[in-house]
Image 1 (cartoon, rainbow over the protein chains, first blue to last red):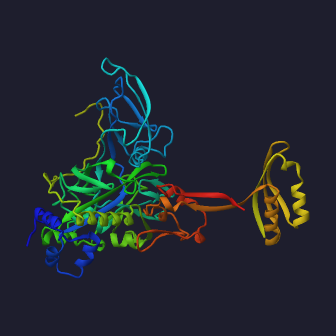
Image 2 (cartoon, rainbow over the protein chains, first blue to last red; image 1 turned 135 degrees about the horizontal axis):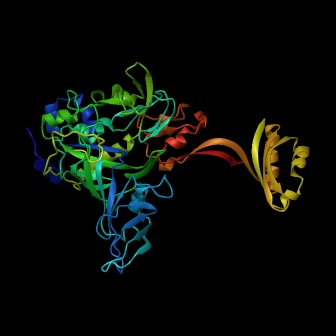
Image 3 (cartoon, rainbow over the protein chains, first blue to last red; image 1 turned 45 degrees about the vertical axis):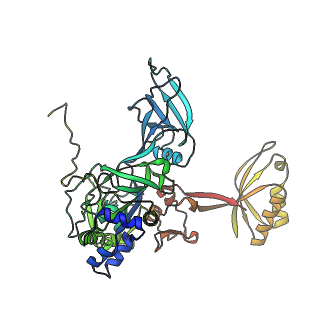
Length: 386
Length: 137
């Protein structure tokens, strides 16, 4: 019998809810009938902890006296966006310090979350209502007003694996890629990954309550580069990067256990973001999606040594996790992960415990995301030609 | 056996004939690889000592006792495991078998396999690896 989100929330209140992680559910599905499982299990927790560059934080600093209309803002030497009202800013995780390329917005965000002081420098032109022209001071998460993450693109559904055909090492956001196809890196939590467990985003939409960075957050839009036109497997999993999520959450509740700055050699700064999404087992069809296992999820291996990153093979996540994959020309290559499966497991367990402790309830999306969306390239055009 | 050491002297120690004393009393051969010493301001010697293990150990004890700061020149990989998030990016470049992901998806490090190639220093997004050239003797 089908269940509703409201019924599942009732079970949470009564303390009778059955929650398991997506990995545990996949293992159970190998032994048990899906119909039976869909009745027995109410919620499956999914999670990921990987580098997600398209992340950042909104901050309101509070007003200086006499006021300043901040028009050039740096936090620990990292540029923050000045085009909002007087003392609002957005600091992007991938924004780099003017003084140290290994330090950036993600470090600032991590330090603020961790309760540390951060140096704020700002200039304004000086106006009748905002006469101050320059300030140089310190802030921390207790002195500022709002401080929340707003990440335009997180939780990629099936990110492609990477390799390198050239004769020199390539330092990329997919890690250090050794010459002549000597390694393959991949960034996913596989069968535990949120959007691989609900491939058509039936239960995930605007307003879905999630675990974000150690606190509670929400899905607020489809992520940028949201692509539903990818070829799909029989199970509905796109074979190349598909859906993404825009998420939001109060950074003051977060912890550096689940938000961590990162620096990729000769690429730049990024941020590891911990996301956990509870998926209600509404019916047998949902159970079938949630039963997905690493053997059934395939992805492409892209060559970062060539323009356009052409595919040089496909493989399953089970193969990627085994440590060895075979490229389409028959060459065997060793693999390495870039996202932390150990942390993702920790998040899935933590989210499950929040639900069991009646601290976290599911929400139904108030709006679902586009079903026909694709990613356009940036096409060069001369002199305003139409 | 042969070992390389960095010897750091205070200004007063520079006035003492330490090298000849080492050769005479501890039966070690001394090859000075680099010297930056000047009367009145102390300095640093990089030396290679050859002799038996006992003689080398005794030399290090003697140098320590008279106030020379002795460190052994060893290239080794230092790993600050505390900050590790078990992402696995370092395992992508480690071909010596010193770094690997275990069945629980946790990073394992076995220093005895490490050849100190240094690739993991650049591969780690948390920057937790460092190649050290000296260690306390």
